[in-house]
Length: 354
Image (cartoon, rainbow, N blue to C red; front, side):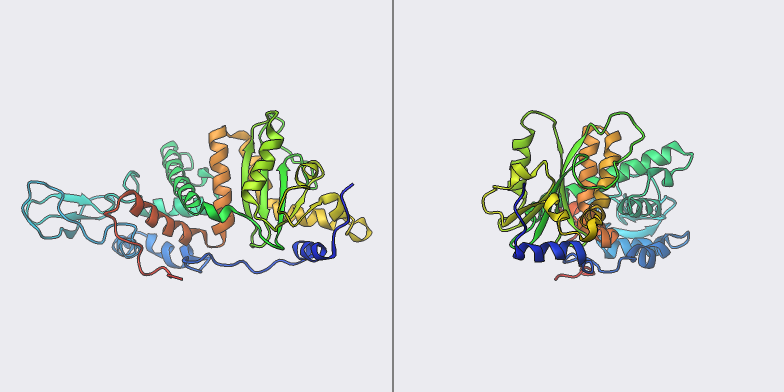
């Protein structure tokens, strides 16, 4: 039987269960959650291709200037911006040798043979976790193209998460961190249902830092081996900061309750003892906190292991940036492109520097 919850921890748990703050904006990101609708979408209509290209240049998504890549051309002048009968309606042209370079050369869009407006709509769709079918209808080629853009967005998000991997040291002194396993724990009051027959073969360890709103989640597939318990303990030790208060299910409690440096470990059984009139308020609040994560864990059951891991990366990225997903991903695309190609322009001044 888990010990009674201390008075100090009771305060932290009460904050977890009954108080949720206004979402905070990630540093260095445009704070308008409707950035796509208010700023970008009006530029995607026919006839505004020039305005769209200027916006892309201003924000570092395509080059602001271009030198002639023709090694036999002796000019030192920059290439000129010209109207052209191409999908982007413009290109770069060298006045000396007449060499032409696409406006999307060496950019995130370089490998996608579609209108820039379509690519931006698909990027927004990825940020909103929209199904691929919304971008193709009956056209298989369009669906395949949208899938490639989605994959590229996932690559950018994975690069960003690896770059800030230190942020996945979750919790800290007096911070409540929830540790649970899908589908075995207390992430949902109802038994999750699925349309397939694999009986939830993919189990997922999920760790949530409740100091962030929405909660910041780290998640990893479990391999189902006999070493799984020791793997869970190691992952918790690697990702939960000293001084944290851990809330976990009854199955994990024996594994975690003696972890060195942890402020306190509380089982959901002890948490439920705080509920008035046995109304399951504690479990209902945990279900609310885990809702997005549970949805992702259900969805990945149909995926291969590789795609399931990608899906967890997307989950973690959206938990961190979802409130301002589109401007965040645009910023990350600019940084990722500059990292892949140092000749690309630096992060544009339109983004806050704080």
